[in-house]
Length: 430
Image 1 (cartoon, rainbow, N blue to C red):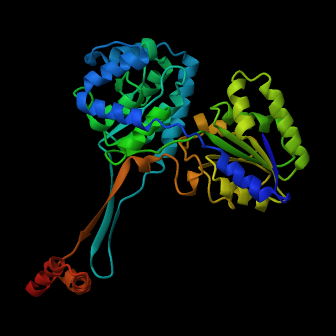
Image 2: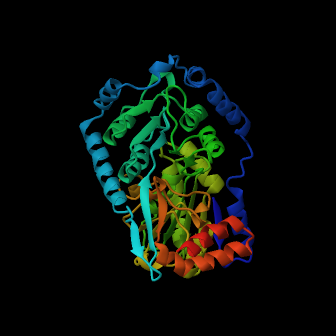
Image 3: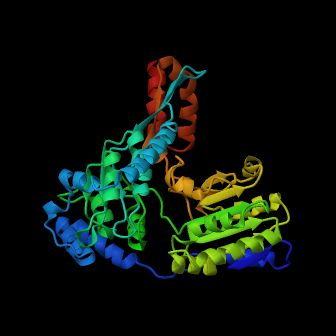
């Protein structure tokens, strides 16, 4: 864990090093992913069966790769009632928040008598990638599927690996709750390729969303342009801005809630109170002694964790904007005042009783958020990822007479004679 202090002469250098140190893994899976995608595009279902046998130790004919409605119902029925209630609570809140995002169409006539409009339409088909095995996250099913459903997407196709043939009942229950019935036991880059290019079994989709390992992320990168994607997600991250009035154990737990995700995850505490910084760091060390995922969390904290002592909250806001974190917790008396100074953050959690984990499951806003400082220019997943804009222009002869001559002049200046004539011919006729 790194200790930084904005009053130190070395702070600028130390902070630059902190920003640069993460994400320096030079390993690349680009070439093997490229080969898998080409194979799926060429051999289709045969390639899917081969890779499923090779990577998931599951040998099935192509017609068994799709999980039947009976299997989905049978697996979902195994979920305990209290856990099903929790899924339903989360789904209700997520759906309500995303329904509130839906934009209205535009339709108006301007001062020149030209009728202008913009309408929103949903994508036809979306592919959902869901990790399988031990890294199974039913909350990700809700966060990816429900906004698409709210947006009006008619077809949702889901791919989830089933290592050794094992399906996760809670993942399938979440899918069932979202109305997803087209589910395939396929994982990895081959699943991304199947959804992007299509096979005899799987019709192609228009956008692919959902988290995955390095192979899945690289596959999404390579199919982008042929289909849309949500983002290339990096390791999870949180910045906690806290004053000395907080319980250091609660701050430590919030930091470790990110650190336990992955060895590359990053947790940073920013505080104006140097003594509290030490108490929080000690609390982290103490919690690591008993945390079940202590090996992962310890490496994350040791390699990428940081405690930054600042001289003012204004300085803290500058630090946050430079970090542009995926998650920002503001544990202050006036969290809204502080958040007003923040320009770059994927999601902000305000107050001493609003940990980031609320947003992971039951807050309502989406937990698919920009990582690796991309919050400087990107936003979290929303209904806008599943709808598109189409603009309309409608005019009669009188309207064209008002604005057409300016179009003729601009087209002529650009040397595009047919453009100019398409306007002037109508002007002369009318």
